[in-house]
Image 1 (cartoon, one colour):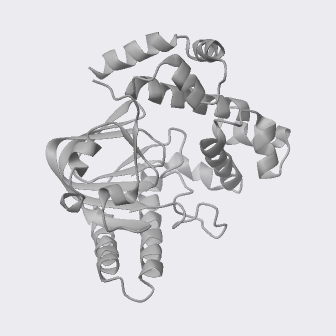
Image 2 (cartoon, rainbow, N blue to C red; image 1 turned 30 degrees about the vertical axis):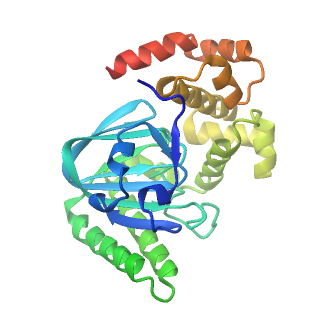
Image 3 (tube, rainbow, N blue to C red; image 1 turned 120 degrees about the horizontal axis):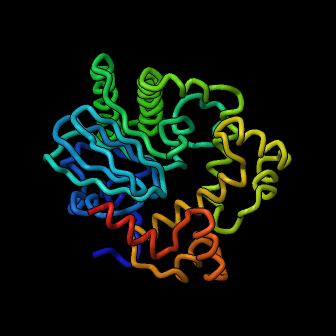
Length: 296
């Protein structure tokens, strides 16, 4: 039975005494976390799972993965995620707000503004590199120590350790997917900023010119940048995000067409239905039924 809407959680829903960040083992999470994780949900923060034992079926935006021992899972805000343990899991969970690890900090070369969280599919599942496992465990241990002790400047210490953790994991990803190195050029940052702006404003801004203005570049330049970095135009980036959000709501909720259209910034529900059919080849009902059939 699908819920009327998708639950949205903050860090404190998972770790009750957390502030802007937290690191705990999977069995230290708040009461009910296991059950909430097994239902489709969104977080308003960035989350990392490291499964050291067991197995889980992870669904991110209707794509299902198998996370086994040694898996690292990265989940960005707004993604619809479901984690069902098929074999009881042990491991670590890290969560942090964007305000804590600022995406817009121009000094960052590695971190949340890389392919770990922002990639063409907005999802990443990595297999642990055995050579890196010991170093990453040491970093997490120090994170836990700072988080528990809360000594002088513990927030700065945790930030530095999180940054180091993400840099180390980025290296693992680069080994697994050498093509990700192509994203390391000077055009990477403005394109990622564009993707992030879409995530923030897709409900009210659906024109390329609006995003170009926010980025202080021309629409022509933004289209060229998008084509270079992803193979599709800026307009297609915006449209595809609206479509994936519609699919999230269709698959995970019982909201009707009019309610979904309103959520996505469409005042005319019939127009939204035609828009969806034009770019997916399916009606809203056809997609909802087919996606749930595939889930079974």
